[in-house]
Length: 108
Ligand SMILES: [Zn+2]
Image (tube, rainbow, N blue to C red; front, top):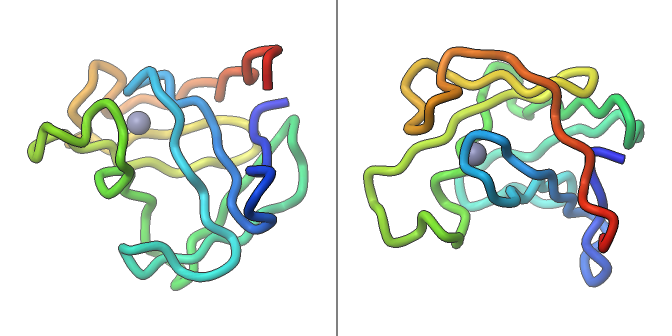
C-alpha cells in the first residue's frame, strides 16, 4: 500500500515522499491551503492523484513538517499509477526525476 487515509479525516490521504523523507498529505475533499483538490483513483497500490483545477501541481511546501522551519524548502510533484514525479525546482536530490512511490511502513 502506497497511500493511506487518515483515520480522523476520510478525505485526506498521506504518502511517504522519498525526496523529503517524510509524509505528505493529499487532500481529496476540500481544497488545501494552496487551493488544490485532488481526485484519487482509489487504488492504494497504483495510486493516481489528479489535481483540480487540472494543470495545477501538488506543492508540499505548505505542509507542517520537518521542513516547515525552512521557508525555502520546496517539493512539487505529481503522482500517477504509483509513481511520483518531482519538478526540477524541488529542493531535494530527486528533483526532476520519477521514482516508485514507496510502500508505507508496516506500522501504518
Ligand atoms: Zn516531498
